Image (cartoon, rainbow, N blue to C red):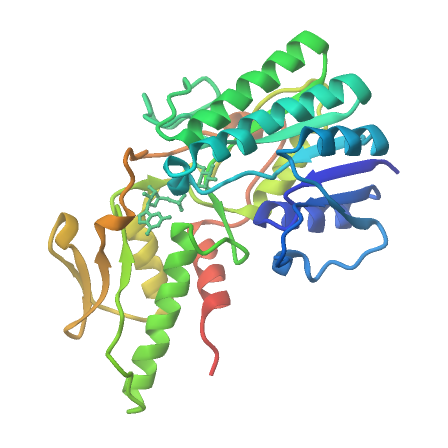
Length: 346
Ligand code: GDD
């Protein structure tokens, strides 16, 4: 029985990682959470287990990180704490750099000094590929980030590699393409869509039953509908991370579905799941989805980014061949799981 520290445990990935490890290992898990005046433990409220303990951990505080690593001397350190919303990284670039890059350096340094046999994972991102040169993107694709978020993750990747090679640490950083779930934050486009379409479906239903909707139906506002992403279910990725941490040699891998879909495709899949028909009209900022003369979805330039990653499509062949990793949820299953979870029950 060993000790595992997971940072960012109340987030989507952290919570699925705890579920996976409690079920599939016998290790003790220390879940790091940032102290907040109002707790946000929604994603971990179902976890009540003698091998799981919450600890205060702020990854931007090196004193805190060093103290925790020195005291617990973990066998595994899984860094899932991040400022993960790309869209906010232009407004708070320093915060993104501190949380997503500098914090990684502090963790590596504390592990090097106090616990060099600890196996370390940092959450890397397909956003590091950014302005892509070829598709699909594999482990050899150059790092060409397009946002302060992507630049911070790319910087962390170099640090992980340098510490691995300089100090012989088992330190890895996966390239995880977009991964979503019923536990996804509402600022990300997938959850925004499934929640938004669920709200609209409910309002259409009320109208149909003559209950009426005061003020009409508020359309779902989105930014770039043409952006393409390689979306998977987060549940499939946490076990890929665990496989990456348990190889003979530390190596970085891409995890992806190997399919790409536009934001518009995601909206269409959610509409289909909700049983709402209609058509897209207009182009660019005038594009709309109309159902029985009602606008249900429209473009709002407020959600455009200063620089966009237009296309992401992963090639996870290496992980599938070497780790024997295989995702279980396809695109349609992902959308239907998320939509069904957000559907308003009456
Ligand atoms: N969030 C958001 N909101 N995105 C929108 C919207 C909107 O209203 N409309 C269009 N989009 C587009 C964005 O411009 C982007 O191209 C795409 O939808 C996906 O945006 P997000 O869901 O915010 O995710 P992301 O791709 O920027 O980043 C996610 O995936 C990365 C891996 O590639 C995050 O999970 C990152 O933390 C992760 O590293």
